[in-house]
Image 1 (cartoon, rainbow, N blue to C red):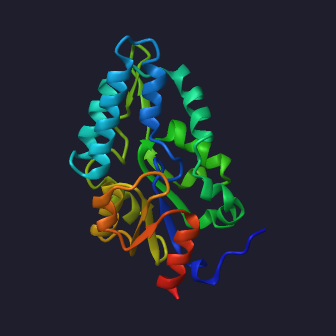
Image 2: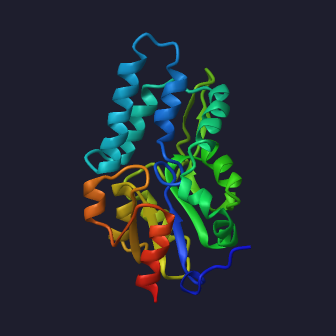
Length: 230
């Protein structure tokens, strides 16, 4: 078992999911599945990808980004298993390299995402992390069996990631790790002590410009935290 470094033993790590724990964006991947037989698949997938980027870069509010993308898809339950299979193959390589350390820190790690439990939980579980430490949204089937955003979800509105982090009452230092402006907002709103821009999968200049730490991979994150916390 990999020992937790001394500088991390009291730390709380808040991870984003899309383009952080996994290298891709789950809704973009889901679009490939849901639109498999659509004649205009390529154009619609490209539009969804652009909306995803707008939300992550801060030019579109996260609630509007979610609404627009979900409105373009007819998501059904049978699509979730192939999506989860894709995401298992996209776990960020540097996290896989440090799987033993992550498992040893599982009580100190939370996932805070504007994504959905339906596909986040299985991936988190495969990494040996705690599913009960996932803060995300849920899907709810309507009368036609189409999955939509459950209106009781807590991570689907502007500022919701910061609110989710704040109510955890975790021990400092608290570090938010992610690729998007919604992750920086956790730091901006005072719900964490450091924001690490995760750039292993994608580099968003506006996000990097607001980061305390730039982490090109998990090794880079550990090195930067060693400097900050010791």
